[in-house]
Image 1 (cartoon, rainbow, N blue to C red):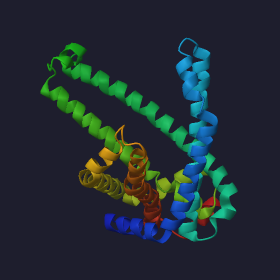
Image 2 (cartoon, rainbow, N blue to C red; image 1 turned 90 degrees about the vertical axis):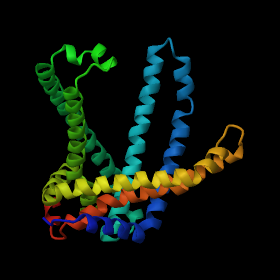
Image 3 (cartoon, one colour; image 1 turned 120 degrees about the vertical axis):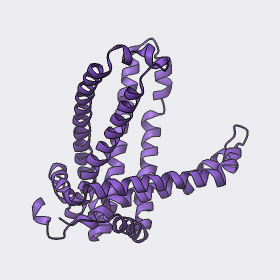
Length: 291
């Protein structure tokens, strides 16, 4: 285990981005195009079906099932593209030869993360129930009623308690998923299709830097917010005018500008961050874990 610093993670993020931005644009762009084509093929009639099926629950459920299935397929494709980018950027090689592995590993990784997420949500509901019972015991049922909250009758202590709980939940999710953040790069570096081994190894590797990773993620979130604020201040009026209902082709141009100047850079940086953390905490001698 190697203890990383926020500065090192920040530097590695943009070093990875600088070295691999063309591959990232190609594979993520290709994934998005493929997802859009699949969406057009499979979902073009789904919205109309849902609107026409207001009195037919079975049709509505069928449409929702189609959307859910498409979301899974889209997630697998984008995850596979990320794995290919991480593998190429971390250990080299030609991503095109690993497409089959990427799709299989992407599906396995998505399944594992869904399982982890569901388990985490269930745990959070249990904690919420316990905290709610504790709050009732401390502040009384009347102080937590909807009438009290709606009329601003809640005590300062209850408001402070709720704020602390919300902050604790946010920090927990940042910490927990930060501990699992290098599972994808680990799978990519070792060409593994076993996400649960990668999750366990990620948990071990990040133990020495767990709160540094939280700080790094918070820093990047702040930078994303500042970036969005600056772009909105500089280009908000122009893009807003181009995107008005009467703008015609200007609306499409405005959407493209937003995508190129806002979403594309943020996606590229977001994909670079797990690879950067892995470079900071990972060890080149741990491939036997996946043997």
